[in-house]
Length: 398
Image (cartoon, helix red, strand yellow):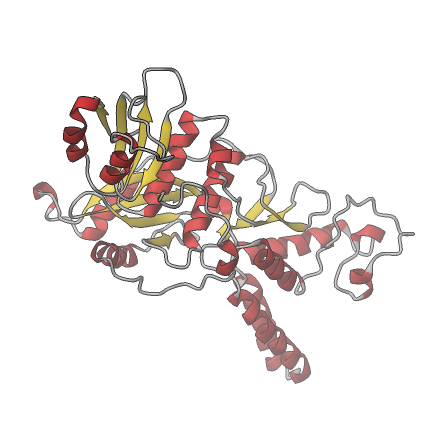
């Protein structure tokens, strides 16, 4: 997994230190004994190794591994995201039973549509069910508070149930406050047919699948029909609902999608010269890194930049999550980067047909390579609540 390896000898420490780059990297230190290796990331590999492997100073409690380490493995990185993702992969393979406690990942809040229930409902969770289950998940949201607010505000436009119990419909059941307020079809006491309830659930699913556009189109069409029929009172009421819907949809960050359809391309700075680094997003899972050279090779100079990017993306392996836990971890990493106050790199999401916005990607590659700010900075609602999600390896040791 790590690209470079150096044998460490105390008599050659200066030569070894001068041979490693003074740049960000993920590294592993291991001795001949079967004990646990030392795994971490750093903003300056040479300085960090000098701190850990130089002759120890007198009367200091600073960690020193000079007499224990026998070889060094490392990979230079071009961005904090690349360092964090590579560190996650390395810890996962090195400490399969303890890596989660070392990383302390906070799983991303998502909206769960319980389609495996006879009478589906929606809830907020940070846990994904089995990968081949019927339930659908929408996220990642920056916080549970923002997910709950969007879900509650959205469900006000529908009559799907909000209770959490498994229903056994009984006409003698008195119902709840939502049924009394005509905000629920009340399947609990057979206030509707099963078919009518399924149709309402399908409307909710279409709303979440399209980021609210299905409901906006539906209301706008009904408003136009009412206006054409000179039913101005009803048209005014529908117009008020459209206006009420707009701030609800304004809460929705661009990255919030149905997780099995969350696909795109992330562009990050690269440790290699004249290059950027690609990370492919498939169903919320992160693949890569892959180095993309800005300058065309001699044999591809006739190719456009868009075709080169598409070719590079197609060559990247598609690696879906093998378990629900792995999918949750990738979403957590993606969420931590996306909602960071000052993030490096850009992400470009695929449309509903799975097509990437190639022209925007080409312009984004130029911005990332030059270190410029993104063309449009998407809002990050709730980002102030994310200060506690960083793990112990997210900051350089002092």
